[in-house]
Structure formats: structure tokens, C-alpha cells
Length: 281
Image (cartoon, rainbow, N blue to C red):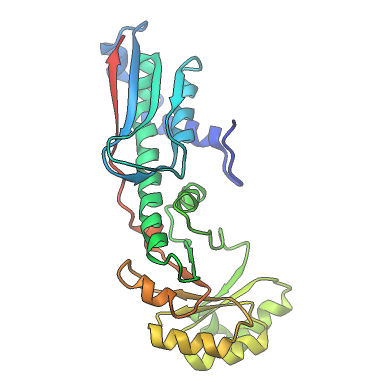
């Protein structure tokens, strides 16, 4: 099955990544050391318990350099696997496999790290009624992939960029003059989805009266969040955001908010410990 994501060109990503590594010259180590007709078999495995993400992209690196490579996928993206689990088995041209190795591993390590951290946050709020959201705090050029990884970990994507929803923050309010005026300008512009960041209870009524469709409750503690949720009264979704950690997210989620957004899912997730071992045939 072809791996596709909206607004993501897999072929272009693979080509650009390999071009960066090869520098227009090639893999000079493999070319010098490995015979052209050598064949390797290999196993990609996880050294820790992880949530898997990125295997179809890893496969694309190997297939790009060796279209005849044999790949057996032993796990699927989104799977929770134990330490020591095999993820892929490969057999193909040794030079091609060595050249693709780092790009494939980097991708799986990074995306699985995000998915694994995300799952820990999802588990922490299970049964609370709140949904975990990611943010736009992603590496330039990798947003679609990183947000894919959060989905594999069980989160829901927040807006994908500046284009799919308005988010009125404190700087917008400062220029517009007030929360209500900023929201009215967005409504007049014909924007359907208008998220408004509020950091004080007294900003909620003006935002709702002007036409906000979603309130982001910024850096509020659980007691203040409960007060805000009661004031909103279910008229629009509410989102708790700002400084959320694994040890605080449960209390935040139990305040009654619709969503909790966590920037560190993509901003701070450590790479998963995934390796790839080859043997000559």
C-alpha cells in the first residue's frame, strides 16, 4: 500500500534527504569498502518499549536505492512494542542498504520518539474526557511527519498551520486594542474557525460575544480552568494550554476542558532507541 499524507510528498522528502547525505558525490565509504555485488540481510529493532512511527518512510529510503530490496514489515505504525522487538527485516544490495541506513533510522527514531511520548500523555488522561492536542511547535519542514507521529501516539492534530484556523493571541489583541475587537475583525474577514487565547477570566465573555468558536485557556491552574469551563457553559470547545507536563496533565484534564494541548510532544521528545544490524550473505 502506498504511504500518503496530505501536503506531504514522500518521493521529494526521500530524494532531498538522500541528496543532503550524499552531497552530489555519493557514499564514498561503501563504494570503497563494499563490493558492488555484495548482498546484506538486516533487522531493524527497538531496544526500548516504544510506539512505532515512520516504518513506511524508512522502507521508501531502501526501495529508492534498491528497487528489488526485500522487506518484511514486522510491526505497524501506531503499534506499542516491547523492548527487543523486531520492526523490519530486509535483504538487498549491501551498498544501497548502507547508504539508506542513517536516513531510515533517523526518521524512525525521531517519529517513534514523538509517538512514544505522545502515548504517555494520552495514557495519563485516559478516562478524563479530555482529548490531547499537539501544536505548531515542530521542526521546519517536518510538520506533517511530526504531526503524523502524534496521531500514531493517540493524539489529535491541532491546526496544521496559519492557514486552516485563526488563532488570536496576546500580540494580536495588543494591536487590535481588545479581545472583542480582534475577534470581530476575524469574523468580518469571513473566517469560520476562530480560536482565541485568553489568560484571564474577564476575557472570556467578550471573546464569546464577538464570535469566538474555540477558547484557548492559557497558563491557568486547575481551579481557574474549572471556573472558566463553567463560565463557557459548553458554548464552544475549551482548550488548556501552556506549560503542561506529564505530572500535571491529569489534574488539568479533569477540570472539564475539551482539549489539552502540549507543545513538548514535538518540541522535546527524545529519539527512540532503534537500531539496524546487517550481516553479509
